[in-house]
Image (cartoon, rainbow, N blue to C red; front, top):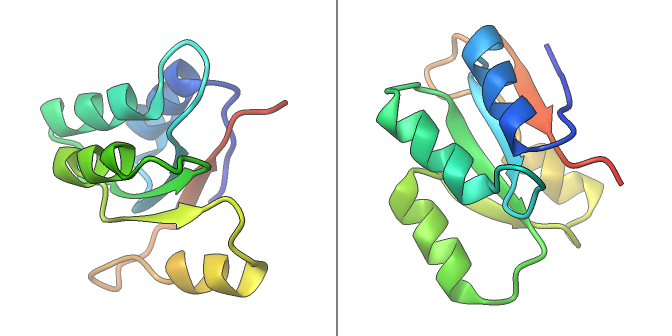
Length: 105
């Protein structure tokens, strides 16, 4: 399964409803930023594995995201091959799919 959300609040709603194995999450989104989404996922005990997609050049954002529960990060400048490798099968092999959420411009 794959889906997109227009902002962080919609992303969180989609994760709650669809329970994806993997989430590709932008840190900088309207209404609810990626860090807030990560905190909510952690606080609600949702087990979705999060890969942060970011244009951040400040390491503090990335360190904070990993401390909050993100598995890793992927720069927005990464090519298709790097993105595909980073978003491979979900851990544990029981892949229900991936929910890709990004802010639409």
